[in-house]
Length: 395
Image (tube, rainbow, N blue to C red):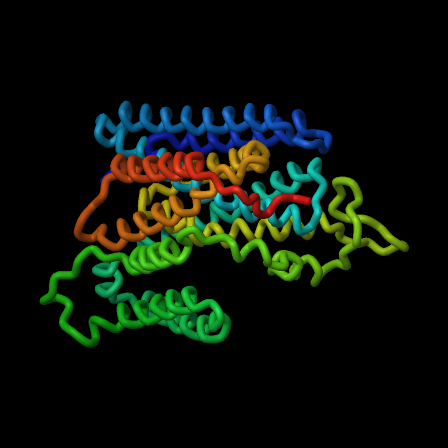
């Protein structure tokens, strides 16, 4: 059985955590202790720092597997898994920048407060991404078709039957307006119910069951559809009322919100009443926006690797560098107008990779080459054929 990094070097978990903690403390507690507008030079330096750390860590991944697992081929596979997952997440995270710019413009957030909002948004991402990735890996391991339908445990039957029925009920109740999510949730529920009851319908001992994974198949279908639908998309976001999004509504349920900002404070007191400031609302909107984007990015990286540590570390390095990249690109985002087309191709490619994986395996080096090539071509196309109109600019 292939060993994971956690088996080879448990100390890497602590090392990764300590490095991230130190960098975050330096970022907010030393270099950005006082709220200020981040210059392009400062953003460029931090971008180089985060990308360099990610590249160095990928080198550690290669070294660990080459030394301890005894093989260049396995080390190269793990190295390219990290690289591919990192750049996929980086590319999809860059797409967040378009929305972040619109959110900051909508709420008229002063530029010197952008850094604090993004910092706390990233803290939330560290937590939510851990939940999504580690839970997702476990669910995937439990939903391989052959093992799933052959499991004779009554607990297995009860739990997955309940989840299947719950998925169908919740989809019909809450997802009627979201057709894509409705179809995916219904398919998930139906497949689970069919899976746990298959052995009662046919003799499974006399048939050959391919290594199809229920969750990965649904993820693949989802990414293909999202990729096709998002071809050059993004214009609808410009007219969205972000004050009525889920994040904003959540804050308003618990606190009254003041009309004005109070420096970099999340709460203020007016007429002896404690109130949330618009800054807290913006943080909540950014958090929920990241969760929605994770619906695309997390399934995408599952097609690259099943090692939760590689997935999480590559994901976090990409997200941590996003904040600096925002300040670096916010004034030049119009120069990347063709990036949504590239992201649509990447999502579709990864979705297809998931769907055909039981019969044809596309290696991590090939995936990395496709992702890198599409990103480079989309950026070059943006520079050759620039978009004249700058949408979503801050007033």
